[in-house]
Length: 347
Length: 227
Image (tube, rainbow over all chains, first blue to last red; front, side, top):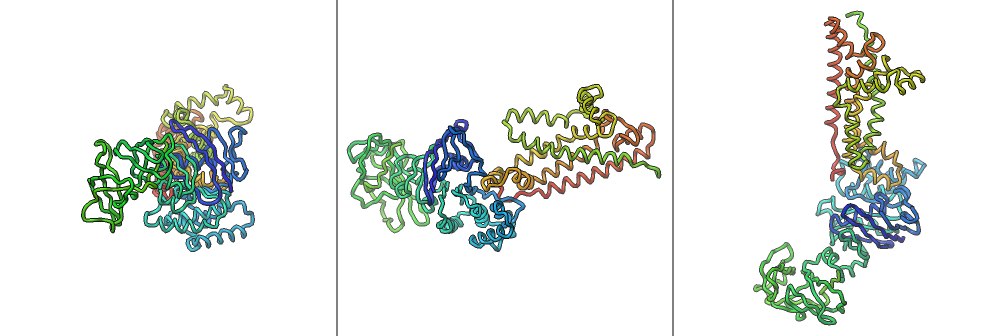
């Protein structure tokens, strides 16, 4: 499976620009709501038409503005799992799944395939229920079954867990990942939840205000986000402007500190990010005196908000998260950051 | 009362039935197309298509006479085809269509506007044809609203008086409808006759309103369509 996307679309003041490619396996698009993630999926599915560009799936041109090719959604063979699953009301689970099998002419064959899919998804016992009687998880499986029997060349999941209760998500994420593990085609999942993206995906792309940034391995994306948007979306709490002062050193004016880095600092550095988990009281590198100004207890962690001693007065406090067993009687006087944890941000 | 001629009821029913069939398709077609239009065009078309609802029916009748009159191009053309509308019962269908169309159009449009577009898109990405999606998903999802619309349109067509009396007049046994009969009988001092037809009218209207209410109560939404 290979998908090549390079599209642009103007929607009022909003400009969508997405250029990326992806292969088999789980690719995640991480972005805030309204950043254009769903619009990108809709363009790939043929529901929305980009102004310019091309979309090629396994060598098949789905869209090309120059060659004036714009296949209708029906001819694209792209599966789309909607956020609210879009099950057809008035039809049972079985009838909904049969809708994906309209190409199969033989009725018995059709029923056999629907039954096999319902067995695989373990929804055979709810085959005669209508959408309004289903739980969120059951609705998701039904919608997925309806798509999978249709054998699409690419599967797209639009915020697949956002309609579900929080306590169900983790379980259903693990189940869905397992279920789709053997699915040989590509899967694109759109989400605003970094934990979900990390758990489910092999690779991640960042979508920020209509601009899609390069797709990277997820570990690399979290270790070296390289842009402010990527740092924010991967959960980095502390971002401040910075400038290069040495080959492996930067100065952060807002905090009035110099930081050593592991990576070579390139020209054009804009900011640095430090994750709340990266600060350590016993770290010798990048250790500076701090003053804890507020502490908040969470179920399994503490959050300490602090200021560096030389920090500019009108700047936001810095966030530090640490496990409960590291808590001391007295708050630390100094906090340090391993050079490898200083994220260099260029945009 | 024994030799009561039931022709007006028969005539009203056939006019209302025929016009309802026309209005059903025309209203759905217009609602479906207008819902997709850009906002400005939508606003203008909406005014034009809804106008007959607020205009006095006699004004609609006047325009219909301008259009279908025997010396008008369209009237002459239809007469060549053997279709006589003016002073003939089929003219009642034309009058009923014009007056009841907005009711169907507006309720269908309201139903289509609340239709979750994800459903249609889901069908398209599954490779289902647009026609199939229209009839099996969109119409099915919106069926309560559309049924309510057609019942209202039927009731309005059945009670049509103003445009009908201008276009087809009142000829007993030929063009008389329930509502024109009430007026004629009252005018000719046949109070008991008028009362009978008033009762017929009341009964039909009550049944229709009951049907609309029942349809609206059943109009529940499923939680997976909620946004």
